[in-house]
Length: 178
Image 1: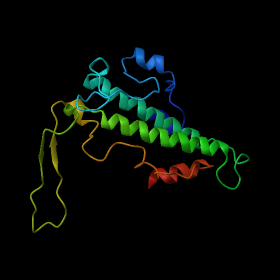
Image 2: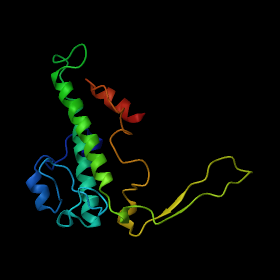
Image 3: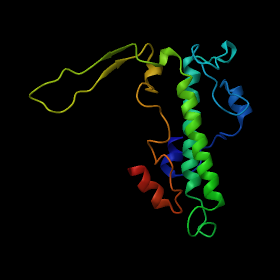
Image 4: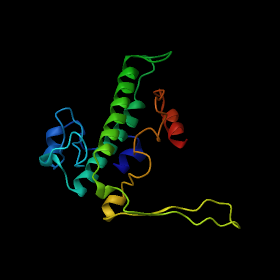
């Protein structure tokens, strides 16, 4: 996935092959959303709950979809849309909104083990005006790697919430640098 992101190409695994991802252990709805693993979630069912490592794998799957989206955004031919949003760009925008929803659903379905069990706020230092760093402890190391206690890990921080689909490679890289 990292290689695909750096080289601005699609990932090697097909993120649309839901049977493959289900056989790898991901619990997905028929629509392709990650099933919630939090017992307090209204759509929770015990048979669809995943262990922590598979929940992290679901995030990797979603991130692969995001990398593929970025790569596809650069392949819009200028002849399709010389003056604005064309059909292909509208499809990409709809897919962007779907990605945002998939990340939101994944985040809302996280079990309590993915939330910090202890938080220590920084002690203010009158001699140092810089803000301190908040410390967070998680029950298991794999749970802190997704850091879900910050704002939900959505594609929105990477690009604008409703992006203008770029028509050349430099535009995407410029948007990612923001």
